[in-house]
Length: 371
Image 1 (cartoon, helix red, strand yellow):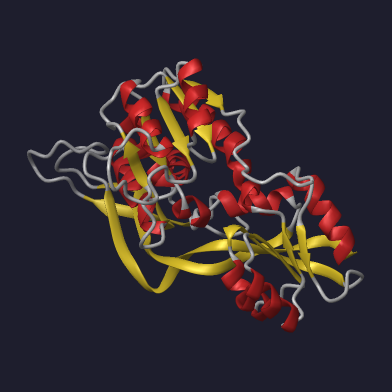
Image 2 (cartoon, one colour):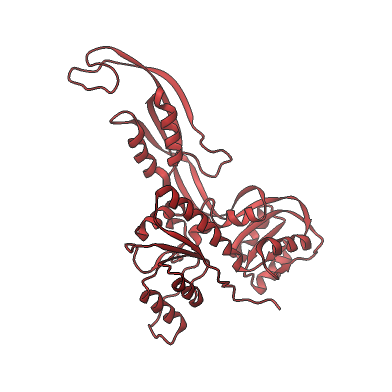
């Protein structure tokens, strides 16, 4: 298969438009027209990760962090980063990165972190992108209504970010008509009055799913030209957010929650910023990566404690002054994406009959060692 087939499927899940403006997501090295046979998921693309890819005959690296976050100023191969680029190219490996678009995607990075913490009552945290939502109304003979409804829901004709799936409005009625002479009606006879039991189906469709839903409608509707109406909803948007807010099943002291985070994220050490380690916490804000600057929003939205990485020294002082306990387990907790992406790609491979193998990187790219 071509690399672009995997990328096109992924960008339906986490469109590049969800990325922060200066974030260099997408194709990093290589060509999306390349044939690929083995995909490796990784958090980072480092020299040792590239060696691992070569040893395992990987021809497509899918990373969370962009490999070329800063442009190369030259191609001096004595520079380890440049030497790594050269090795990637020499072995015909394509590299793709999904960074803040994966952070903001529904069921993406921050949902994975919230699930790892077993949070409930999940809501979004940092607003990133508002997407248009459309109301699709489809008219279909009643006998076909269930099949059409289920096909359109599977194609994405359902509101995202709710506690319900497959929500559809349906109303039944009767259609009366007389096919004109020369017509070739799907149902009824030309020149004779006819009536059929009809159903009207209404869906809410996020903009990112619209193309696939309309294509599916044309494929599954029994009429040669489906009857439908499409309206952009002026008063409704789908909100994509970075980070998540949720509740622990019961309150915990800060020090106990810190120990819990160590176990959940498999880290040997972490940093705790708190005035009182015995303070009870239950409402949790979590944002993978470098999220220190968002602590005022976490407090504003009612978080008792905030989990994020790479907290700066002076920001830590501000967190103490605001009396918001913060747990910093590091940036590398985002390695949760390695198995999660692999699981998703395997599912897509089965659904789409792709001939690819999926390999999870086993290299620990965390640069820090706790003594």
